[in-house]
Length: 426
Ligand SMILES: [Zn+2]
Image 1 (cartoon, helix red, strand yellow):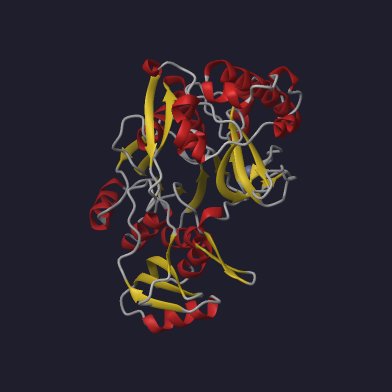
Image 2 (cartoon, rainbow, N blue to C red):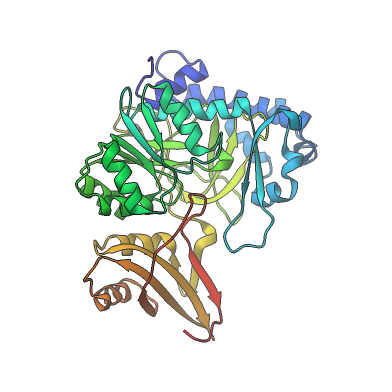
């Protein structure tokens, strides 16, 4: 099929860089693409025309010059998304509307053209080729209900590499999903971390070779349990609707995401002052689209926490990678005196216990005192007191544990700690 099982080879092909690809060659390509993107956005989008009024794209000589440009964020999309588009409405192929949980904020709308979607399919085909391939059966447990949605684009990518895809969708009924899996005996599954864990617990006799996790924060504890339960290799993917769904994918070394460098330029900034941080330092992930037609995003703040890994990967790649996503700035709660709590921390603590199938958590503050209330879905005959004691020992905050049904998502929501201020009955 001509698909070479390396993201770097794909980047070399896409960028027209012959021979061995390295960061400096890639930097020249990306700088050129940045100039084009900024000029294109200035000329076609009222939002960028105004934002970059005084900036001459020709003066951009290296990637570090990008730091002169203002950052953009989710509010810009919410308020001025239509003004960010660069093509006529008739050329828009797909609009994704994103709403955040429990928020009264207006939804974000992200626009894509046919060419934009094609770039995503191309990345999915090449990314999946690194872990599966011809005649392999892939069960897609990501939303599959919409044409040109994530499941659809992934299935199209898989068809290109000769894999057979089964569009299951996000899982609501685990018995039904287990029955389908039993019949299909997939070689590979693509799904949401918490849902894949529940499915694996329902089907420990199954032996898929590969599982790719995406769409939510990926706790190490879940990856490890999945690898043990199914005796499979677990890969992580990072991306979001704004990045064109795809963003980066792990290789077999599992030390960071190999990025979609041909289409996206990543930076890490200090969220407090917006300054670009050097490789290795933890900060907020920011990206710029390099080939987006309908709605370019330039220096877009994701709210996600990570770092750039500059040293070569043991797979042989010398291109920069993105480290593990260590949560979101918006879901870290400061409890005072260097104490914080986040869903990532809770995920790692709770999912590292084999008795824990799933959970939801709620943080409340009553007259200045923080309390965490957790509802956990536990394996049968688990002592709730044991888990509560374990949680109390792991966290520096009063905890109450009850049994509950766990976190439900159709694939568009991310797990988070719900916060309630001054609730009296806890
Ligand atoms: Zn690698």
